[in-house]
Image: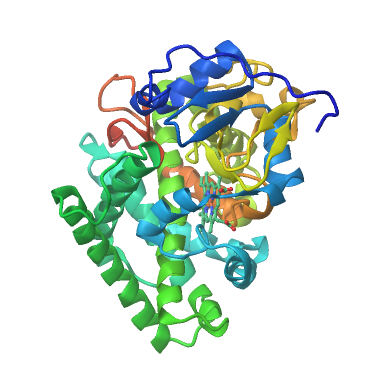
Length: 445
Ligand code: HEM
């Protein structure tokens, strides 16, 4: 915060009467933010419909201010939360106040490193099944995006709910994917026709939601028979009603697989296109693990692979932006923010900010070496967010990614099915514009 008078925002060209910059933003969401921030600076105010005020901040200090220092002035916003609740109900990603606090307290112990490390063997076992299948089908085409989606869902259901989702994984994954597409339309475009209108798109969403809900009901039925120390039982002990329990489970599934599976797909794609990086990863795996399966302990030795995964999340942060709503007027780095405004923190832009990254748009895992990291502000990189809503699954996601990549890369080499450049696309999270497809290529050692 500053005591200087507030500065004016730069004028941004291209605003249409009535619609402002919205059509441009809807056409090419992350490109819109990247272009304008690079041309006009870190603090921007865009024009939207007359009823929306909308700012975007890309400087690490601004992120720190909004997410931590002045967090009481901001919420996730009623509009954003209402839309996400179409899938997640009043779960931890959309709830507020006492409800949110109670759930966060109930689940946090299950995400502590000491607890999470116990899942390592299970993650490796589930991944090894895939590696074995790929080895047996050498030369065939594999859909990495679908494979990672299924693995992410199987892992999270096994770990958090002790529930075998395998027979339903395709149906559940597809219905969730369609659901993300559906809610993304509402997030991007406030003029999307309401959900309750009898349109085919709305009926289809209702069918998708029914598929996902039936899996969640099955999880609750199974778990209730079981007296184990799973996270769901902790939520039951915390006094949640069946409705609330349902919302927490679907929210945790939604938050826990899509972000990670998407990042793993991108990582496979990047490794296939950067043979020198891949060679170094394979060398590290051979010397750190040999033929042993990775474990939570041995994964600690995979320093370079960790850098590779961090770099993947820098270039393609699954949560490409964090959304907030100003409940009060504020001043961010000398710029005024009006009460009742949408505030976007585009992590995609901060992660590619030329002031903090030597090769902003290139895949360069050395960005995370000790030397390169020196002096870089902490908030220049925050794929898991920060402040009170910081990702509760960050440690789990980091460990799971390392174990999955290590297990697959010990036995298989990433080879793309074709040489196409794949661009990212905002679809709730930052997805590839098309499924990432590879060729099963067992490693010759
Ligand atoms: C690469 C993987 C992941 C990424 C990039 C990621 C990213 C994020 C980000 C940026 C937030 C903050 C959102 C905000 O401030 O509004 C968040 C919140 C959250 N994440 Fe993750 N996440 C990942 C994996 C996971 C996993 C494995 C889980 C496990 C279930 C999880 C559960 C959650 C939950 C429950 C929240 C909401 C926390 C709260 O509001 O208190 N995430 N995540």
